[in-house]
Length: 68
Image 1 (cartoon, rainbow, N blue to C red):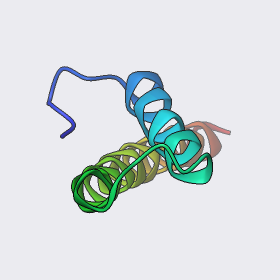
Image 2 (spheres, rainbow, N blue to C red):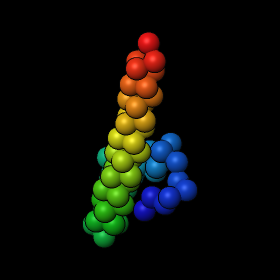
Image 3 (cartoon, one colour):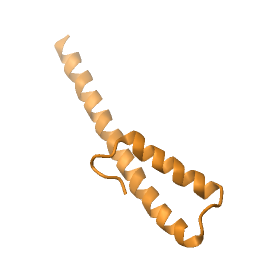
């Protein structure tokens, strides 16, 4: 699961690793379920990071626009 100190890049790397293992049929049925749960958590973590970054960028652009 993604932790607070984990970076977006680290989470994406873990997610890519899970996807590669699924695509190559390396996982048995028990591992598949656990890996899918972890992938869901990583996707949520990455999505939240992206939304937060997007909001911060929009805020900075809005502040810069209001100065002009």
